[in-house]
Image 1 (cartoon, rainbow, N blue to C red):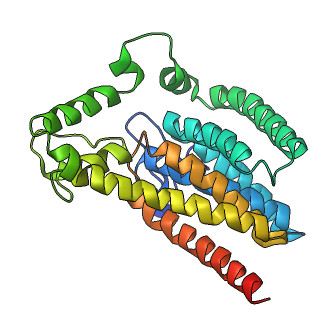
Image 2 (cartoon, one colour):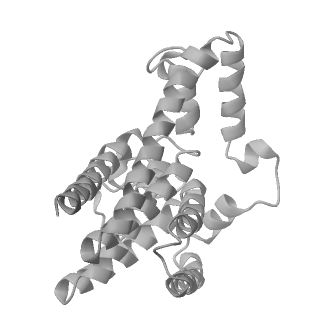
Length: 276
């Protein structure tokens, strides 16, 4: 953030930018970094709620830094992921989340955005913000930053051999096709192209299983553990939506490691309860 706002360069930390000025972070790609932040932001909130003293202050600083970095990625897919993910989780966990807490969180989010937007213009990011978030001009190609063209091209190549919709072209085939010079910008489409409907359905089954285990754990846990599991549901929902607009191969290494840790905690808690 210091580097982004013109303070002495901190490239030694791995901070970098897209050619248009969007933050890459240590992930090295703005859309993946945005998905990474959208996933971990709820966990940062969980730390703030659960801790006290210095840890709470540190978590508060982390919340502000994470929110600021998420804004500076200017990743619309991550924004949509965070919003839709929050709405989905509020309904998905409606038995365990009070309307009062949802209302308070929504109010805080709106205030934070209203405060942050003027700061973006003051910091010189106004033009980039208007360019990235403008939805009033241009065709689908422009509005989607070229994604619709990439998706249609990918599907047209699959139509040349319809059986690939079932089997795919092969593991990592998309990256080795000469016809493609850009990534798919869609994790689900990437799986469909490479490993077909069979592989995509198995991937979706994994996502469904994660939601199922976490939801069951929220109903049995309490205290700090429940806060972290709940935050993971919020983050995972945001990630699933964000993956429709990005591939998260680099960020996914860290994200899935964290998901595995939370799932292990959830399953261990269920086992202890069953023994008791």
